[in-house]
Amino acid sequence: MATTSAWVVERPGPLASGPLRLRERPMPEPGPYGLLLEVQACAVCRTDLHLAEGDLPPHKEACTPGHQVVGRIIDAGDAVTGFSAGDRVGAAWLAGTCGTCRFCRSGRENLCPHSHYLGWDLDGGYARYTVADVRYVHRLPAGWGAEEAAPLLCAGIIGHRALRRAELPEGGRLGIYGFGASAHLAAQFAIGRGATVHVVTRSPEAQQLALELGAASAGPAAPPEPLDAAILFAPVGTLVPTALEALDRGGTLAVAGVHLTAIPELDYTRHLFQERTLRSVTANTRADARECLAEAARLRPRVRLTRYPLNHADRALADLAAGRITGVGVLVP
Image (cartoon, rainbow, N blue to C red; front, side, top):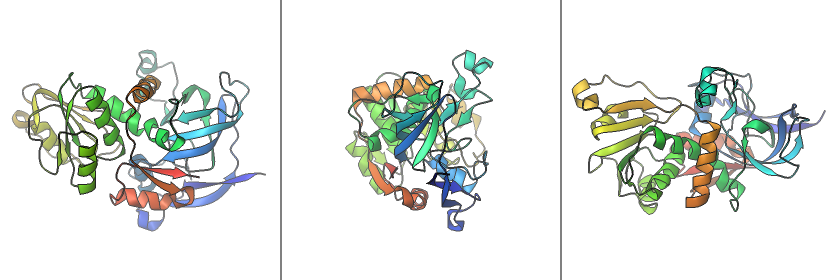
């Protein structure tokens, strides 16, 4: 039986306990709608860290993380149409839905209770080969290399959806809390739409990057003016009251993470009165992905990359946890 190397989460726990292990596994095989992909790049996401450390409960024993995958098709199932061997495609977090529930039928497949996710329910891209459902893969913008395209498939998509959920008005004032992979792309989407962006982050390197990308301000303190909208990317619940308090009347705070530490008690008058809104961001739809990739093709945002060989995926997650990655980490086989 042919085998291939892949990282797996053997026993979720602190990174120091070594939850991520590199193993030889049977070569994956595509089902009827499957595409067997030779992985060319897989971006590293904080969700991968949450899975490894157990903040998100495992859905699959010894699952291979990774859900921002650019790969070359080397084989396909019998039901696959529209793609050929050698084509390059992207596979993202949303990997399957039922298609029949009220959420799927109303264009909200990200809320499907039967949804499946790459790198959580299905083996993902921390590997040399992976399988993706042809109905959930994406054509990539022309002219993009595999490494710079990979972060668009979650960091870009989630940042794009978070902007919609935050209801940023045209030419509005946006606050961004935390400035990692998704935030540095969302900031560029917002600036490309004419917004004024203020970034709140403790990292001097991230502050410098934010200013280079066109942010009006970047620092550890509150934004210098009231905000029309804000996005919380840092998985820190104590920032929720702070971000709400910085909103102008009628402003909206969107929380973009899949995991968040506890939110302190809110004071209605200080944090929510005058029609301030707090809302979450959950996964993505395939329409979100198409819209994000189209806007990326038009705006051509800069993607700040830190590259890691595939066999250093554990170090990439450790660097992410310690805040040593400015922009986004990408695994390259």
